[in-house]
Length: 242
Image 1 (cartoon, rainbow, N blue to C red):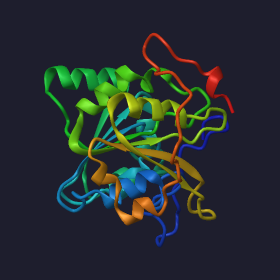
Image 2: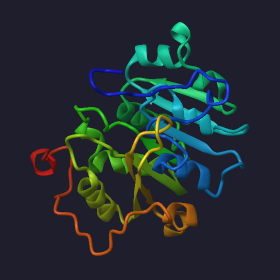
Image 3: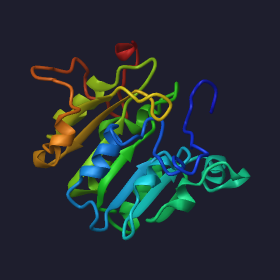
């Protein structure tokens, strides 16, 4: 917990210890993207911007690679088991990699010196807190994300936020890059998971047509974003205040 923002929790009971919780349950946009990707069970590459307590590692399988980007070394220590609180990372069946630093700078360096990570799923979990990093939600950043995303990959954007309505911002970005999209609202289930709002984006519309995804998708026919494209030179938080 940081201020009034809960970044994650893990059950102590053996029956629920490995259960993905909070905003990342199996019916959340992030969970659905990971569970229903065509490469599930075939050695997926998954990137996650924003570590939290490492909850998404609960979806990792043998042969997968889960690569987390995190700017705060104390968060990494806690997720990695410091104090004995959390074990999602240590329990994960996949190969887990952690990159310390500013996520955008890290992705830029990887692209420059090693090429694309070719992620099957790239999760952006950066915008729930009260001070959302605008520079990670603009055209230049999305261009970078897409260069690291496999052509048959899904970009999963967690946009739950108390104060900001982020659907139009991501919608405009999807229009700009010619991406198919779904808006998924998860009502949450008691103590297990929180209500959450996600957008899934993909170059290939077929990736977003599985019944599991469509059953959770909000109807958005005819929706037109009123928001101008955000860039490194332009953004407008006042326009999206709730």
